[in-house]
Length: 160
Figure (cartoon, one colour):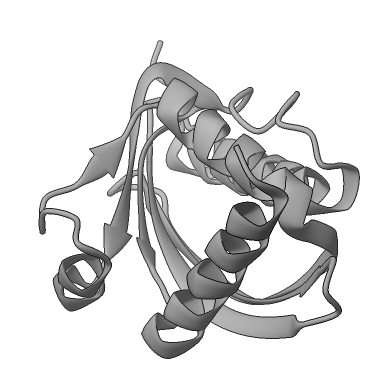
């Protein structure tokens, strides 16, 4: 028997909360150990808007697999000092198997530069709500570009 809408909604809320907690731990612990545990093996992650991707030199349809996303985080670790995240709002659409999470995060780099980013995830779930199979992140474009530039600058100063 298929789960009820109420059961799916509860599962989606729990899955989303765990995933956002895991995302925060990436920056606090400098580890990708749990970042993909709430994701399906074939989950995709896309950054938006397309204008941000274009400015970064990426194709407008760019997306990452779990492994690519973990590698992306790992490349940032040498530049990270610490991070924190505040969940501002979530909206769950259980019948549509989607949720929106609006959050603000602050990341401090080893050079003491600090960036506060405000982003929104649109998250797609499996039918039972226990796994995420797609995430689209609408990023704070201006601050994201500054953050990426600072991370790259630190990486370049450390050499290959």
